[in-house]
Length: 330
Ligand code: LMR
Image (tube, rainbow, N blue to C red; front, side, top):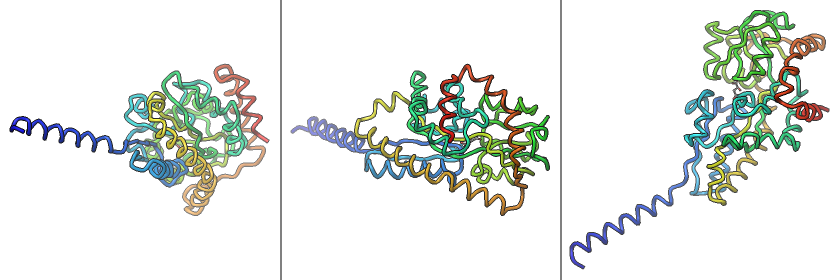
């Protein structure tokens, strides 16, 4: 072999080995979310990573980014569509730009408890909603639980709807939630989750609504005077991915990820109630915010004040879907 062919041979060998090494690199998959790690969603995301890497050894690496570190509320959907992140799990309140159907979950006092939410999500109509955004390029892979919402404010009294008249409330980016606070005579303000603590602390808003787990892990209870046990709605999630990316995955990788997702879903949904109970107790123990019990009569007053919201959104959501959800209450 002359010098020139030796050189060509060496270059070909080098290129082939770089190619082989490249082919062996695991696929990096990013999962971004906005809550703390010690929450139902935070733990389910970590469980998904553990299972996916175990089921697909050397084939995938899953990186989980909690607390809006990679993308916050405003950017995460676009990031999925652009392929900058592969999985996110936004609250069901944050989809109304993509589907009006999922607004169902925001109707106040629709579900009695998280068990009813779970029953609906497992029904044929609930499962159909996972595919309601496919035409927009979004595929839903499952529902993850958080829990029922409680209402909090920086005032001493939070027992009846009159107590929130004129107050400013932070809401998620949802038109239904906006209508809910307007029905109460309050002023709703859409805001990213990562900005809520500061907005409460500085008085930009007077109150907010969230689960015990978010109220605890974001320390909202430190900057609110009262938390009323309203259980007036639900915060749950849809885990979504880019439909084109998902369909283009090698079949074995897609199968492994789907299995990891199913098992992580079962795990997260199994611990969600426990996490919320634990965090409710921690808030009580901290003694910073007063936790307000409500009588049946108080709850009925909140229910009545929020009722006009149903009429307003019935057309967009569909009364058949509302009926199916109601059937899940026992
Ligand atoms: C919120 O924005 O209040 C929550 O939905 C955040 C979350 O993902 O639980």
